[in-house]
Length: 392
Image 1 (cartoon, rainbow, N blue to C red):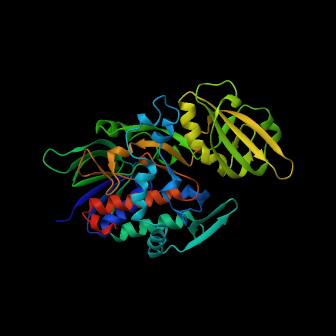
Image 2 (cartoon, rainbow, N blue to C red):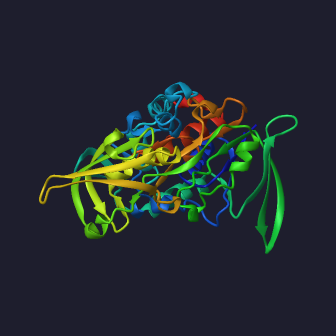
Image 3 (cartoon, helix red, strand yellow):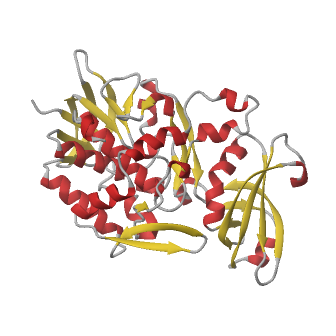
């Protein structure tokens, strides 16, 4: 008897889960609340879809729980579980960069590797640098495998069935009317994403159901985004791009000045100055930590050092990050202790799987977030289809 799987979300991880499960004999239904699939995928890599990296490694991944512990009075003693690196390392063992490239090559996507200054790794794009090609390839494969995708969905409930399996209730538009549906399945995969780019469908609509299921959840914060300062010197620097070093300095005890605060991390690369904010990859890499510090009520400073050309050294007081609408990803999500990384299954609810941005995992710039979406989606899809043995 074929297993029936329902996947919530038709983004990167959801589509990969659908393909992986259907290729192994499962009957798959994907529920998407937008009018089309993969809207956020089309924006990745500025529309060019940086879908993996030649240096995929656990050190490129972080969790909000870990970061928040830096600013908590309890420190790391207050943490409840494994680190992001521990969680991700097992996921990456089952799906390397080479595996990712091979998977998309089989879907008709040839890779093109780009190297940037300040980064020795290789950013992997489709050869034609078109995110639409990646989405089209995934949708073509789902169609070949008879995966059903329902659009315009509004969920009513996600709960274990009385006897066995799961029951999903939802509303959807049909012939100008809204129709109620109830679907039964053996497994559910949650792949609804984070709050980044809410116009693409990543919003808070799934969170009441996560709460109802009793899963621990860290509220999302912006990550991979610009940092904002009220420093007047930004008006003079507006439009400049300079190679340099960005250092994040955080006051653990609300110190009145950066001299009394603590250095947290630094990144080098091209730094961009805008009238009210500072961005560029080095700053974006630090933004998830800045989000956690600001939420904890700490004072945050960004020290910029530029040595080439006209030397520049200045410390900016940071008062906020960019919003979700201008963040490439989010920090936060379902706690890692809730999920078994070997199969992406809930430790509380057999038959419930979670993948992608919905988990408390966020990666650095460079294709790491998409790679985790593919890897975790594949594990969830294979496991829900009963083919966990094919993972390693």
